[in-house]
Length: 169
Image 1 (tube, rainbow, N blue to C red):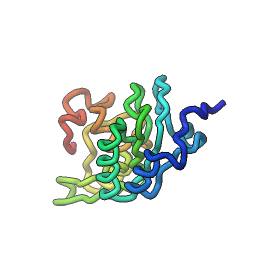
Image 2: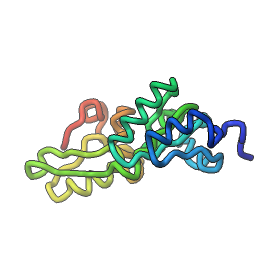
Image 3: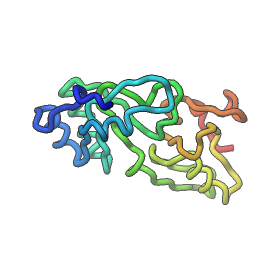
């Protein structure tokens, strides 16, 4: 059963502030509960979910969060086992609009937006015979934003190639 007490009223001042910052603000209980959890056992429920389409909306959301003193968590793939993708504040979902991948210098460097999955990045690097250092088991779903935020590693990279020492192998 959905907890309807969590819902922030559509006509509340907080919703108006966040809707001015981002076109896609979700506050219906069904939307909130559909993506409010990650792979961990933590059960925090966000007050609002924002799905920004560009960096200007992200900036405006952060300004609105500062103004309203609303805590912010960025949501990427949701594969965290430790609760890093959950919040009882504002959840900003970067998965859909931030997936650009640009390889440079014949695969010697790469520029990646936070919504790109590790698998997508490694697929792009494959033609150059390279891979990204971290190799989390959830590479098909986990995103670069989450990999960086959580210092992801993986069974084959140990600590020599975790995301705090991010490099191409």
